[in-house]
Length: 340
Image (cartoon, rainbow, N blue to C red):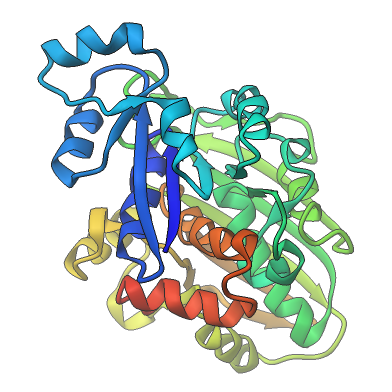
């Protein structure tokens, strides 16, 4: 069993811990919080040993009735690999400790590529991650873009990609963020950072992206245009999407035309936390113009799509499963996950 520590039990960390716990070849040996919180209570209820950054803060946890197993360094000493799900920028500060303990580490997309010098997406570069010491799982938006771009590029060649990210303003629990009543260009300059981030995984792709933030918490929406090198039909692209283990079609027959309805659909499907681990591509939007111009809308669940990628990154770094398709199958099967 691969012993996994989750450093940072927040939006991503708590999901990673639950998905690790569901895997037949992994176990959660600990999770961490910096202060008492509802998530710390849940960690205790889940039976995950809870560690804290500074044991001087233990009395606050004791007063809250939250059991503490020790400090983060103690947790890491028992791990084969750590998934760092701390807030952006904090992960880089944690790296010296991981180096000191000679511990394999996985960071999230909130960190820069340089934290690991290797950015990961299971569908794109799993083989290159085998037995590495460090990896960075790219952000939710980059994950969604990499999946569709790589699949199309392999089948038909992606001569050029242009994409617009319509981004959620906050996660559902993020009460201190906005906007409330505005569409914010983020950034106002073009290109946005998403294109260069895609190129950390797919360096040969010609991509330009732009982004804006809107007042919603549910999901991101992408407007994607790919110029193909080889002719394709709409039916070809639909088949490509259906064959991919982490892309799914939002069927016309569902009547779903919004992210709110899509999240409700995920709830009705019985998904944990209504999580959508796949790219949710709107069937009606998929269009091929003049044989080589592909257009589509895809919804990306910012809290979920990177979670399964972390699981595959664990196996790749540990070298326990050499084939990407097999790891993806194992991860999905443990969650009883088939794409929408």
